Length: 474
Image 1 (cartoon, rainbow, N blue to C red):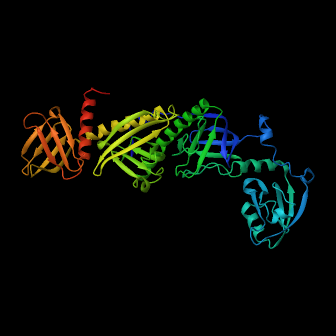
Image 2: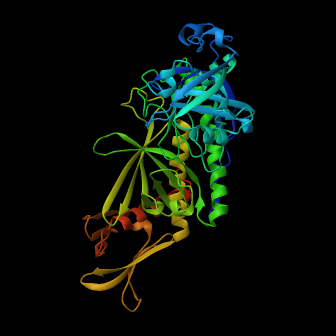
Image 3: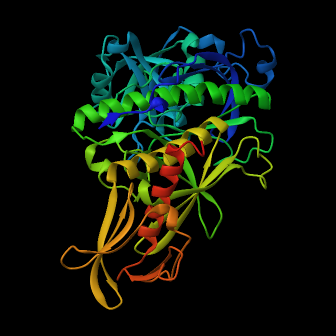
């Protein structure tokens, strides 16, 4: 698999940082977002820092803990329950340069019932076993083997409690990819990778004000959504992220090609939204245009096996672009662009309508599909197949340069016509093709013995490529 075409090299990367709100746990939370070459980093806003407007909405999270216990050693006795054990979660450990800290206390379970333990307590001893220099795994083992009654010596570290509260507010944001880049789980910074990510708007979340940007994971299982102060800011963020996604997808395709040794020439790849012809809704599909086909996948492929199992594949030589432009019936027509394709297949005509998010996307996809069809026509040169003509077995050929000709079983020419003689073509959508070349004997009926649509569409592609080559259209 190689990467060809101007489209695969014309994009650059952008950097951007700003204040937005992310949607997490059914609420909008203010954060600082930074766009890097291959990811977004998200850091929770500090309510006590430079934005006093956040204080009332997000107060300091350790108000319920008595100041009298701060940095004081305490011994708390916990009786484990059959279900839920101690009822706590811990973080930290020597590998993170942190003490063993209680990060969560589950309501109604053993630790909660003591009324003596708090999020932010450092566990120093468990039944006399010293955990002050323990790793996280060592602490987990010590707590599990401690028996039914557990004596914990703890010390409340007031300064770490806001960190745990902040960390839990961003819990669930981001995902990992096979490159392995994830945020350290012990920090309050989250990472959203852009590798093969689906960047869109108004897909999963209603957005009448056009202020929300959506980023879906490559497997479409995770959603990261952030809201900007106005439409212009959201558009600027979207355009910056889109540039990085386009460049990153090119790099990913090169890496994949070197890893699987595939010779397909990928001209363009990325996400489209396909319209359901019945429900009229939109479904994201990952698309790739190779030197021969438009290929669609349910999710972004990550290995050769995935690339070899598409949802559908449509030969460019028998695919036509039928319309493109803004979606005029959409209230968001300045942010919603569609194009349609029709492919001639043995089952008849397959129609698809796709949606993209920008004029740049629309131009890229439509141009590469049309140019790909023309290039496929020039490369293939001719299509030849056995037919019946006036009840006799014949061979019918459509040649890119020379036009149409019919030969008999001895390869003797029966008739031949150049493209300029063709007046009308039609078919019965079943097996018959009619070509009218003018003149007394110019109307020919050919029984293709298969659906004529693939051949009809190839004929149109040959003609379109020849007209474009002559400079009659651009």
